[in-house]
Each structure stands twice: as structure tokens, then as C-alpha cells.
Length: 219
Image (cartoon, rainbow, N blue to C red; front, side, top):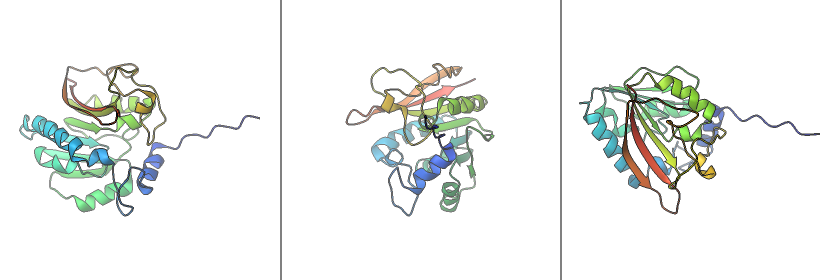
């Protein structure tokens, strides 16, 4: 008799477990969103590119950081925004961020970006978030972000050409293990845009692919 397959954990439970067990590293006593959110060689060029974009709008944009994590990156961007809304699916992480980071133009929300309503704004930041989600959840997110004028998307993808958007179960892993990566302009997502600009790309050591940040203008 064939054993019934176990249903995958909901994304919220998976992400809670990642932080509770420090699966992305860091001290046991705190939340840590991984080396990709802390290595200066990775985050400093990214911050320079995003800050340049925000400054080009004279700090007039309401920014929604979806999947803000431990906020080690977002904390550098708040002063370049009219308002900065940071959201994550892990409630204890958001409560921790609310305690550590307090600014007049900053707000934190605990949200499941695939299933909850998103805050209104001008620009969405999705930094290495979609790569952890299934195609079904990504499709849900895309339907919601089309109301924002700008999307700043960062994804970890193979260095060589690849078949985009191979499906995964939402969780700690990403598509790089399948020699794939997220591309919102390709099937099955087919995001419609007005313009795109590559803000930054970085080749990772030891043949681990590259991190690419792209700015999309939707309308």
C-alpha cells in the first residue's frame, strides 16, 4: 500500500522554523536573515544602487519592503523614502524589529504577502524573497504588485543561461539547486512592464551563481 504523501508545511510555519532554528546562521538569541543580508561585499553595492534610485525621486516614494527579514538592509533605506513600510511573515521577527527600529516614517507589519492584502505605496522591494516561494504563491504576489509603479526585484540565479521558473515547494531552498531561477517576465508569470533597468549584479564565489537586482517600471 502506498503511503500518503505528507502535505508541505504552510510558508508561515516554514519561515518561523527557519528563524527559530537559525537555519540561515547567526546567534541563537537573535533573528538572522543570512549572510546575503549581512556581507558588506553583497549589501553595500546593492544599497548604493537602490539609494541612487530613491534619491532620483527626491525621497518622495512610499516604499513597501516585502520580506524585510531582520531589517539589516532596510534600516539604511528609510531616510531616502517618504514612508517606509516593512513587512514579514514571521510575527516574532516583526515584533523584534519594532523594538529595535523606530523612525517617524517607518512602519512594520506582519503579513503573508501571498495571501494578505498589501499596503499601498509607490515602490515594492522584493529582495531574495520570491526565490523561496512556489510558483503558485509567486503568481498570487504578482497579482497584487501590479498596482505599484516600481518593483525592485533581487534574485539569486544561475550564472549561465537557465530554464526559468522551475517550481519548488516554498521554504528554505531556492531554484538554484535545479539550475533555475525566478524571472517574472517569463511564463508562467508574464509580468507586463513599461520599462526595466538592471541596477546591480554580482557574481558569487565558488560557482554559486549571481545575485541580480532589476528595477521594473510597471506603468
